[in-house]
Length: 191
Image 1 (cartoon, rainbow, N blue to C red):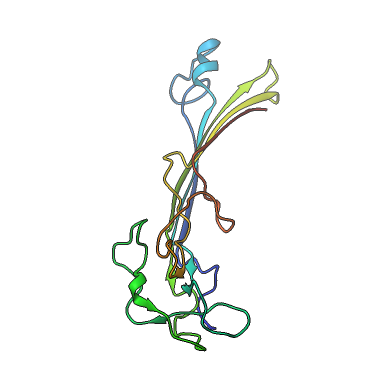
Image 2 (cartoon, rainbow, N blue to C red):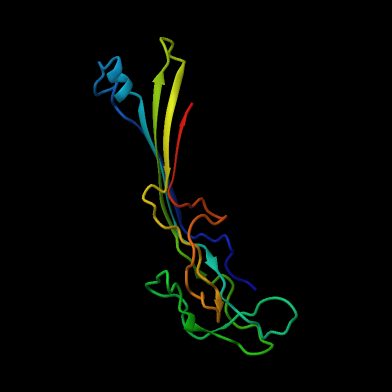
């Protein structure tokens, strides 16, 4: 069967940025800070990786096969548009657009013709650099990192087996192997 690749993510935009805050000794604001004040306000840096991409394709199949070929799945016949203009988690595609092709027939549904949900994820981190002693080369760094800071659901593709209870329904979220998608995760470190 010809069709879209399983890795066909049509659009992807990843923004990566870093900003050193202008506070503390030698900076624009509070440049004369020293002692405890410089330790508190100086040396901070904000970083972010923002990911926006369209979803990955999937193939609709029949939950039970009348193909009688010994192995493999049976594709349904497409009788209407499967794509919905306003998909939801409960109905991502039009399941009524697919019917059984009958016995001994593969069906005309194409490979990977529909697309699942995309990704919108913001990862944010804050670093604080501390000078250790009078030597400029000795430093410690505190890091606080939050992946998916807004805890935006990153949904899997919907159920694809026509005739099953989960057909067209998204039943999970998290981190599929193809993408760096996750529910909110927080980590801190000192090095």
